Image (cartoon, rainbow, N blue to C red; front, side):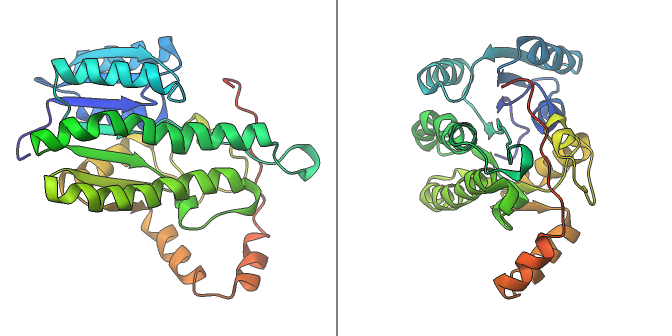
Length: 262
């Protein structure tokens, strides 16, 4: 795939990194499908993409609705064979009031949207991409996959699942010329980041993150983790005894505000 991608799909395309990725891929000759829950937000991003010379379609679908998602993806792929598929949709969660354990419903929602939603996004287009012998798949994980946090256990688990599944999928698809890139960002300015009320070291703008991600995806990187300072700290921390690391992490307060879009 030496030429610029012509057909791009982004889930969670109405906000944050998803919206920024849509903008960074938008340009003359590009056709985008933006998938998400908020019709107004999707259309606003689609309008920006069109102003950059791209064609843009939207689909209001929750990625946990696998049947509706597969239908939209396959229909778009039939008309515009997908070059880049970005499974970005995600939700966060955390402890209940009084530092009580997060509820099962919250944990289940995060796993269904973040992990199962990513699998549901990618699976319908795997065989079409294999048949064409080209394509790029981008899976949005998190630095929480590399360093899980006790206060966000379900979120960390869902993102670790994406990382593991993406690595395995990359091995499976490599002989067919289809690349898989797992992205593990740190703090990126977004609605989700705004609900995190703790410290956010080295926070990056969504546009800067999207530009970095596109560059690495075009090099067929299997893993994109940033910022480098946080990645380096995580690598050092993983060498420490778990008991000592737990004491260090326990000094960092983590509070997640409720998501008004639940």
